[in-house]
Image 1: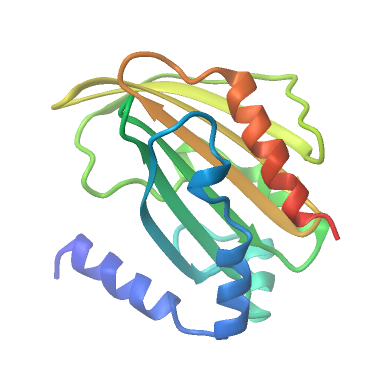
Image 2: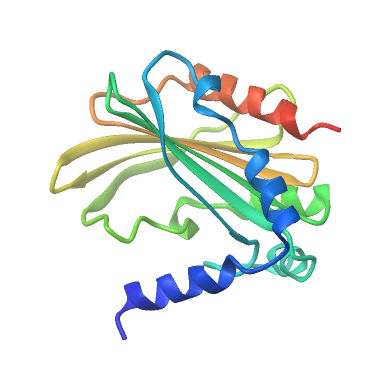
Length: 193
């Protein structure tokens, strides 16, 4: 059985669970209308039980045992070819969300199985603060593949019991950090009770 077939099977099983918890995770994602500029189109959306895919530590196990969900939505800006991926992972407690931020690394992300190429110049950019976010971390890297060079920036944070990740992609330049920080701050406001 191919690794792709196994991954698809894991994803199908991971989608099973409480519809209300899944819908709550999806509802916490940003919409295309909330992104800067014009021409944004939603390209995909998915949700799965937290702690069922990829490497999952104790926080992911606790979220899985509670039946909580991770949701992800991707967007393309048709005028620039930019992409943005928004991901929200629901945890049992704010402490677990902070733990997820501390343990995050680009190498542990669930990678695009269709990407063939290499990550270049990966680095963490320290000292970020975003309104409403706790323990903000930011990363940037370039990729080189069959379609050439691409520029990636990612920012993640804990907001209450939610872990939020905003990942950006462009082929001509890096996204501006201020743009990503504004998106994360706007997104964070959805998670404060």
